[in-house]
Length: 72
Image (tube, rainbow, N blue to C red; front, top):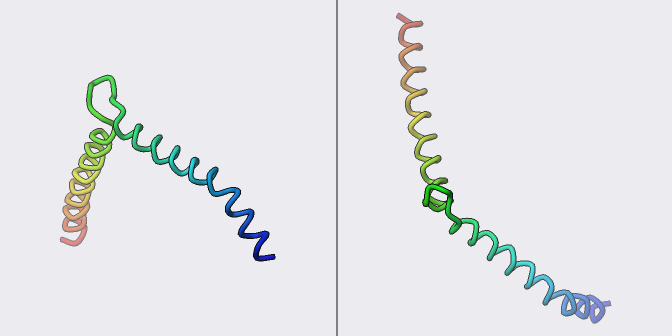
């Protein structure tokens, strides 16, 4: 049983390695891809994260002001 399992693993290993390399390459190519504006997708993602953080901070300030008004 153990020899059959090892045999199956060894026979599937090249395919699994190829799939892993293909996924890694596709992901890295996507991150290096450029939008029509010329910035990379990674830069666009970072800008989106920064904007989300800024918006969350603004919403937290609004919530704090509304809470103070409701209490006082």
